[in-house]
Image: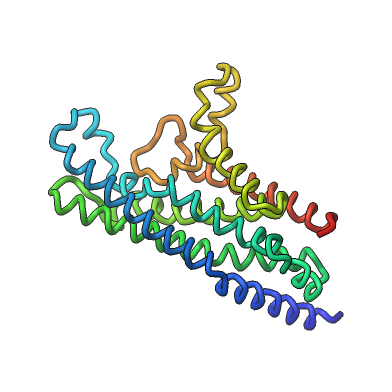
Length: 264
């Protein structure tokens, strides 16, 4: 096959994956849930914090970070966008459509690469859109209560908002890798919940030597990218986010190996 034909074939595969993704009802339901729940959490978090700001202590006011407050929606948003990433793969296994996809694209690495590219593009767009919408909504609610709020031009704000979108895209890619390896929505989702929520939440139950290692858990450090007030525990949030991305690449590499070698 000529290089030109190969490029055309990959474009066709990309287009087919995009058509499949946008034709799924679950895609639109998940995206609607992402924005409805995400912005709802932002509204609740900023309204509650704004109402309590007047009675806050001096230490609490010094640590006041209106940007991070607006972006706390990521805590739930990462799970929802993870569901979207998982369904990119597992929905085809559930319906048997994966056999048709492999018949149309026998080169398995090309098929999975197309899924990754399409899902990455969608996750980047919706992740950034959610972060900017959450920031603007949160700051408008804080301003309405006449408490300190931020603007996109303030130091560190644009970096935090954009970094939040990248973080969500990385979670979506992690979910694709897990979905490919496990081929089942429930198993992949349970693993994602464990990685993102359970391990950090249960860190205090582990022995002291293991808790020290958990300080380097990818999603814990990468979440510092949402803040504009430096966290002494994670002074280099972008390096932490980069480390998380390396972990995601490792999971995707394993997914490619498994997808190429395993029978459908």
